[in-house]
Amino acid sequence: MGIQKALLIELEREKNNTARILKNLNSDVFGWKPHEKSMSVGELANHIVELHGWVAFALTMDAFDFHKHYVPSKLTTVDELLDALEKGYEKNKKIIEALDEATYFENWALKAGDHIIAELPKAGAVRFIITNHLIHHRGQLSVYLRLLDIPVPGLYGPSADERQ
Image 1: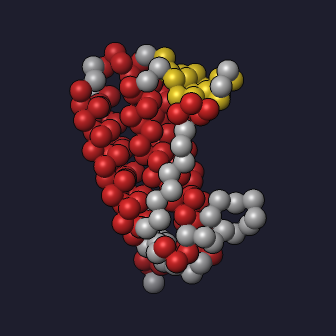
Image 2: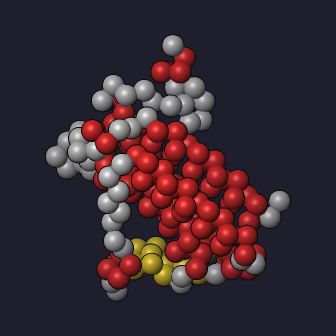
Protein backbone atom coordinates (compact mmCIF):
# COMPACT_ATOMS: atom_id res chain seq x y z
CA MET A 1 0.00 0.00 0.00
CA GLY A 2 1.36 3.41 -0.95
CA ILE A 3 1.29 6.57 1.11
CA GLN A 4 -1.69 7.96 -0.85
CA LYS A 5 -3.89 4.95 -0.11
CA ALA A 6 -2.84 4.88 3.55
CA LEU A 7 -3.63 8.60 3.94
CA LEU A 8 -6.99 8.27 2.23
CA ILE A 9 -8.02 5.38 4.48
CA GLU A 10 -7.02 7.27 7.62
CA LEU A 11 -8.56 10.59 6.57
CA GLU A 12 -11.85 8.96 5.59
CA ARG A 13 -12.02 7.11 8.92
CA GLU A 14 -11.33 10.30 10.87
CA LYS A 15 -13.82 12.30 8.77
CA ASN A 16 -16.49 9.69 9.52
CA ASN A 17 -15.67 9.78 13.25
CA THR A 18 -15.91 13.57 13.26
CA ALA A 19 -19.26 13.40 11.47
CA ARG A 20 -20.56 10.98 14.13
CA ILE A 21 -19.81 13.48 16.90
CA LEU A 22 -21.14 16.47 14.96
CA LYS A 23 -24.44 14.69 14.26
CA ASN A 24 -25.05 14.48 18.02
CA LEU A 25 -24.76 18.27 18.39
CA ASN A 26 -27.38 20.93 17.88
CA SER A 27 -26.77 24.63 17.46
CA ASP A 28 -28.53 25.39 20.76
CA VAL A 29 -25.36 24.36 22.61
CA PHE A 30 -22.84 26.11 20.30
CA GLY A 31 -22.31 28.96 22.79
CA TRP A 32 -21.65 26.69 25.79
CA LYS A 33 -18.15 26.25 27.17
CA PRO A 34 -16.99 24.41 30.29
CA HIS A 35 -14.68 27.20 31.45
CA GLU A 36 -14.12 30.85 30.58
CA LYS A 37 -10.71 29.99 29.05
CA SER A 38 -12.14 27.16 26.93
CA MET A 39 -13.44 27.32 23.39
CA SER A 40 -17.21 27.14 23.05
CA VAL A 41 -18.85 24.07 21.51
CA GLY A 42 -19.33 25.99 18.26
CA GLU A 43 -15.75 27.27 18.17
CA LEU A 44 -14.36 23.82 18.88
CA ALA A 45 -16.59 22.13 16.28
CA ASN A 46 -15.57 24.73 13.69
CA HIS A 47 -11.89 24.26 14.50
CA ILE A 48 -12.14 20.48 14.16
CA VAL A 49 -13.82 20.80 10.76
CA GLU A 50 -11.30 23.37 9.53
CA LEU A 51 -8.43 21.11 10.64
CA HIS A 52 -9.74 18.43 8.29
CA GLY A 53 -9.46 20.98 5.48
CA TRP A 54 -5.88 21.88 6.35
CA VAL A 55 -4.63 18.72 4.64
CA ALA A 56 -4.87 20.66 1.38
CA PHE A 57 -2.65 23.42 2.85
CA ALA A 58 -0.01 20.94 3.98
CA LEU A 59 0.13 19.16 0.65
CA THR A 60 -0.09 22.12 -1.75
CA MET A 61 1.87 24.84 0.07
CA ASP A 62 5.47 25.05 1.30
CA ALA A 63 4.35 26.78 4.50
CA PHE A 64 1.22 27.85 6.34
CA ASP A 65 1.56 31.18 8.12
CA PHE A 66 -1.15 31.89 10.69
CA HIS A 67 -0.62 35.63 10.24
CA LYS A 68 -1.24 35.43 6.48
CA HIS A 69 -3.50 32.43 5.88
CA TYR A 70 -5.64 31.72 8.94
CA VAL A 71 -9.25 32.87 9.01
CA PRO A 72 -11.29 31.04 11.68
CA SER A 73 -14.33 29.20 10.41
CA LYS A 74 -17.65 30.54 11.75
CA LEU A 75 -20.27 28.03 10.65
CA THR A 76 -23.43 28.22 12.73
CA THR A 77 -25.32 24.96 12.13
CA VAL A 78 -24.54 21.27 12.28
CA ASP A 79 -25.56 20.92 8.63
CA GLU A 80 -23.05 23.61 7.61
CA LEU A 81 -20.32 21.86 9.59
CA LEU A 82 -21.14 18.48 8.04
CA ASP A 83 -21.21 19.99 4.55
CA ALA A 84 -17.84 21.71 5.07
CA LEU A 85 -16.39 18.48 6.47
CA GLU A 86 -17.49 16.49 3.42
CA LYS A 87 -16.34 19.16 0.94
CA GLY A 88 -12.96 19.37 2.66
CA TYR A 89 -12.55 15.61 2.48
CA GLU A 90 -13.44 15.52 -1.23
CA LYS A 91 -10.95 18.32 -1.94
CA ASN A 92 -8.25 16.50 0.04
CA LYS A 93 -9.00 13.25 -1.76
CA LYS A 94 -8.52 14.83 -5.19
CA ILE A 95 -5.25 16.43 -4.11
CA ILE A 96 -3.92 13.22 -2.54
CA GLU A 97 -4.80 11.14 -5.59
CA ALA A 98 -3.07 13.63 -7.92
CA LEU A 99 0.24 13.96 -6.06
CA ASP A 100 3.28 11.83 -6.72
CA GLU A 101 4.88 10.01 -3.79
CA ALA A 102 7.91 12.34 -3.67
CA THR A 103 5.70 15.33 -2.79
CA TYR A 104 4.88 13.80 0.60
CA PHE A 105 8.54 14.04 1.59
CA GLU A 106 9.01 17.69 0.61
CA ASN A 107 9.55 20.08 3.50
CA TRP A 108 6.63 22.03 4.96
CA ALA A 109 6.53 24.64 7.72
CA LEU A 110 3.89 25.92 10.11
CA LYS A 111 4.63 29.55 10.95
CA ALA A 112 3.38 32.55 12.86
CA GLY A 113 5.04 35.40 11.00
CA ASP A 114 8.81 34.90 11.23
CA HIS A 115 8.47 32.30 14.01
CA ILE A 116 8.63 28.70 12.75
CA ILE A 117 6.36 26.57 14.93
CA ALA A 118 7.18 23.29 13.17
CA GLU A 119 9.07 22.15 10.11
CA LEU A 120 8.69 18.62 8.79
CA PRO A 121 7.90 16.60 5.65
CA LYS A 122 4.41 17.15 4.23
CA ALA A 123 3.30 13.61 5.15
CA GLY A 124 4.44 14.27 8.72
CA ALA A 125 2.53 17.55 8.75
CA VAL A 126 -0.67 15.74 7.78
CA ARG A 127 -0.12 13.21 10.57
CA PHE A 128 1.34 15.36 13.35
CA ILE A 129 0.01 18.88 12.82
CA ILE A 130 -3.39 17.99 11.41
CA THR A 131 -4.62 14.47 12.22
CA ASN A 132 -3.26 14.27 15.77
CA HIS A 133 -4.43 17.84 16.40
CA LEU A 134 -7.99 17.19 15.23
CA ILE A 135 -8.17 13.93 17.23
CA HIS A 136 -7.09 15.88 20.33
CA HIS A 137 -9.80 18.51 19.84
CA ARG A 138 -12.41 15.90 18.95
CA GLY A 139 -11.62 14.26 22.30
CA GLN A 140 -12.28 17.60 23.98
CA LEU A 141 -15.59 17.87 22.14
CA SER A 142 -16.59 14.39 23.31
CA VAL A 143 -16.03 15.55 26.91
CA TYR A 144 -18.19 18.62 26.21
CA LEU A 145 -20.95 16.28 24.99
CA ARG A 146 -20.70 14.22 28.18
CA LEU A 147 -20.84 17.37 30.35
CA LEU A 148 -23.94 18.50 28.43
CA ASP A 149 -25.53 15.06 28.84
CA ILE A 150 -25.52 14.55 25.06
CA PRO A 151 -24.84 10.94 23.98
CA VAL A 152 -21.22 10.37 23.01
CA PRO A 153 -20.73 8.10 20.00
CA GLY A 154 -18.06 5.42 20.12
CA LEU A 155 -15.27 6.29 17.74
CA TYR A 156 -12.80 3.46 18.29
CA GLY A 157 -15.17 1.06 20.01
CA PRO A 158 -18.50 1.39 21.81
CA SER A 159 -19.01 4.34 24.16
CA ALA A 160 -20.70 4.10 27.55
CA ASP A 161 -23.87 5.43 25.88
CA GLU A 162 -23.82 2.67 23.26
CA ARG A 163 -23.23 -0.11 25.80
CA GLN A 164 -26.40 0.66 27.78
